Length: 511
Picture 1 (spheres, rainbow, N blue to C red):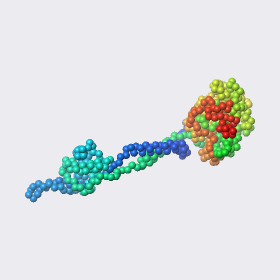
Picture 2: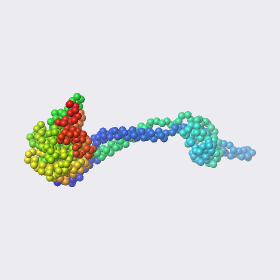
Picture 3: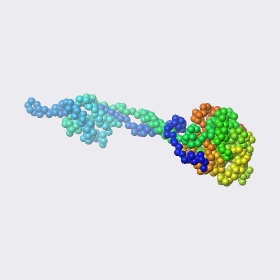
Picture 4: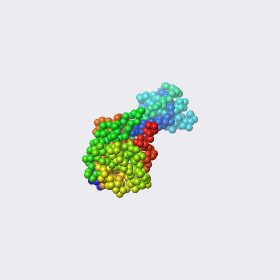
């Protein structure tokens, strides 16, 4: 086990507990459609619910005075009854009116009077302060029934109030009218409110996403979160869009369309690699946590740059489930086919690139014979003296176990990380899985670094479309198996075909 991996495993790393604006922006760009959909869905739900429950309400009122019966004696000493008003009476009526309106006595009287099973309106009363004037209001869903309830309430109120305040007399001031217009109208306010609630839910989701999203964004993150050094930083590559012609979009330093920033970053990567590689670090593998992080781009360009520096390099495509080195270099697939099914691999001299290429057989029956520590060690040991460096492209260590087998046969490792993509805990798991081998981890290579993210002050490339990496890492395992990608004979495999360095689509266009 390497000392570097030991120190990584033993030391606890501190998590960042604050939210960065870049994480929020990523969340917005990733979930804006979900936020919008939530807004529309909640708005529609609340609109339909409100519409289904909406009932027009009609209201009618009457204003009257209330006097109570008082007993007095005449001059002849005979009792006399009259209806009078005073402040005490008004205060007493104001306190008792709500109880009388809701009493069973008045409710039963209204039901009998109108010959109905229930009272279809609600009654409320409001007293004018320090007077015996009251406004009685009936509210219901049907104009005529609401009016009838109010009239019946006024008719039967004296009988209901008799038990609480004695005999009373109502004197009408304002007659009630049958309402013509509802007091409430259905509006779209609920829909707008629902849309706002949906947006808030979406914003909360983005907030949680940003809070939990722990990715590698800078070189300092690699050092602090992973306890690794950074061997190289490869910028994101973009190209112009050409309408009438196809251009070479291969991500290699041999492509004339690649910007100078990319070329310089590869030279820095190469020099850093040469400084870090020990005397016994001859077989170097490149891996990543997930597919699409650019490990093939990194190892291929390192091989080409080492060749330009006068080093003899063998480039090995050991990602046998999904080989992509030949695709990256736009190689003629027919010339790379092994001689027969009993041949495990074939080495081809790529004179145009100044490197040698080793491709393993795509025969499924031979796969487990090739993915064998003893076999791979024997192959690499046999080739060590013929090359300065053997660079091996391997599968993602977070996806299949092949990488751990290959690591046992290699000397050192470059761990490729696509900037701001894979969660830190997944990267740690990938590195931790390699701690069971004796491989020396040279450090990390950050791929797809965007302007302003990792210290780059310029845009690399030509400003249209991103081809330096492919952010499909979330589709773990999708299509990752035999025959998916490019085989040696130019036959269709999965989604693509290779014809002398051109895709099938390009070939058809050229013909």
